[in-house]
Length: 294
Image 1 (cartoon, rainbow, N blue to C red):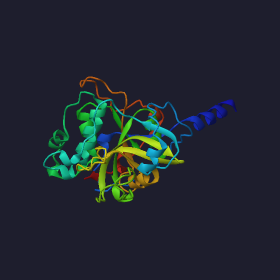
Image 2 (image 1 turned 90 degrees about the vertical axis):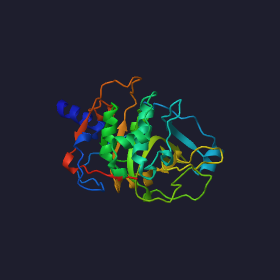
Image 3 (image 1 turned 90 degrees about the horizontal axis):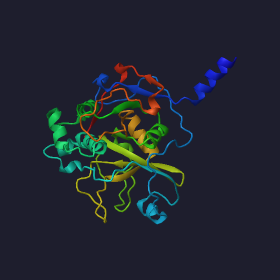
Image 4 (image 1 turned 120 degrees about the vertical axis):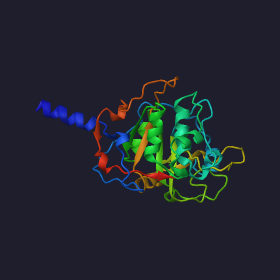
């Protein structure tokens, strides 16, 4: 009886996430939808907030289109610039959201990372076309970044990883992100393009009880707010819209670990010992499909 009770308590407290070896991703389809059995991760309260964002004034939140009352803010920033506008990344700029997002993640991971999105594109040229999710993971591996690929089980999974100080690379369908024509607000899609697209998720904010994810969206093309900040930098997307954008294109997330090294010669660890993956269920790699982003 005691043994059964212990097992029950353990089951209730265990956090489960799904982990897959990114090198096993297969190119079965241009569009990725999960067909595997998923196990959920339940987070009931913030754990070990890695970077509480500086509180944003209510008037600013309102002008940005977020609301008025902030109750939680996590933002995994760096004290240096690491945003990339794909519109300035060379010959294949129109298709360089993948190289740009991956290079942003590497600049975040390594303070001294000097390669450009053009370098990433030239490494995996893909005839100048859309990058695949496997190109992203292969380039992270080539540069010895510590990361994992997890099955998206909902808002809580993204929040948990951000609370641990990690960032995430997503491949989404932007048609599920509502277009916002208000040039002053910082919520929603600010461009016309609808389709597969890579973005970096670096934080989240809860305003008036609603969650928005803070992103670095490379599809900027020199668009700026009145204060000069690129519109793709710290762009906010409503949680439910982002979940739909993921589940209808590529229902996984590439988690880039916060435990970065200052040197570029650290060993690559393919099986991350991230807290959320200590108890994990491996997915059948044959059911993981590759997605593309423009």
